[in-house]
Image 1 (cartoon, helix red, strand yellow):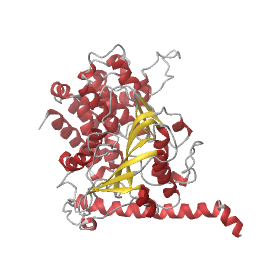
Image 2: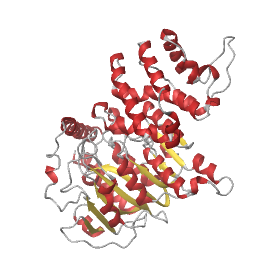
Image 3: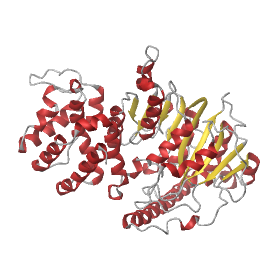
Image 4: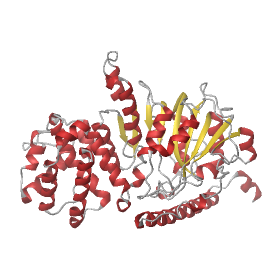
Length: 501
């Protein structure tokens, strides 16, 4: 076991202690982020970003109620941009990153002994080896552990690492490209893209003047709606040396319309309906302006957010590929404005938090920004039919994507020469005419054998429970979406309906 894996295991074990203090699994990593930030600033020589009275040693050496009271005051103060001293005068301006991570921060800890257990355990970790392996990898390992634990309920924020890495290998992020994730979660896609660029460019050494600073400051754009998840994202990218634009915002409002155009967009947008049944508040949306379906709206954002010739890889649930009405109109927009060259049908069981079957769609925006004729051929790779039952006893691995990556080819725009496969093979070619004949339904499957039984082989109780809950959540989502669509039809009848009346 590496030092990083050992530290992650020790930190996660502390969660059992904190449950006695009312701290849930979903809250634990956020709670730990505040403490780890202070400790990691000390370990990396960056404590100058934090006022002296709030640094790690000042907290860690305290005891009992004094420590807990100081910690609560620390959280409030570090997130307060207008903090004043005892004379009522404004204190020195705080570091923007510190302000963002601690904005509206509060602790769920009530027992001083539990805070002391945390600070002592963190101090006792092997920080020398952790620094050697990379503190960013340590923190990302903790996020992954949180997402993999079915009890934490955090899976909606974490895309499986083997899937992210496969997408990065195929889309080939390049130095100087502007890369965006409009639903960043904890920042996994951007971290992986930066890691590839960093490793392929001599760790950013020897570049022309200003190129390295431009890469870490100007080339990455992230947005995340959920405040606690945004904190985790900020911490994650910071520990990986990224100082890009990571905003706490709703991309489906006009704020999202002002995000800079991207050369590459990588994302796993949230599934489901917009909270409260609200529609996207985007003045530039046309196709999805009237829907509460978030995944459809995010796809329209991504289409519009690409620079001419820009490429995208997006995780979407099956309904994006087959839903009628707005869904069909969106697919037509996608295939007209872009070259939708590849669809990967993912195995079931890797997104239990959402409880839906998923795909990755790969597309390139028309280089001339035209709005017609973008797609001539769509290649579909079926990685779902006859796939193993993924879970604790059979985790998703990098090698599971090897055959798909070989079939995809070396061109990040999907233009490599591809073999036209037989009906019994996993990779097949469909012309735009073929798809039009299907009513623009892209939920294409031809290898039926074993697809519906993919979850029958699950044996771990957590996997089985998660699968059941996932299907229940998805059934509820579909009912809610149907109700919203019916309500929308009553409130905003189509011209044809008005004429009929």
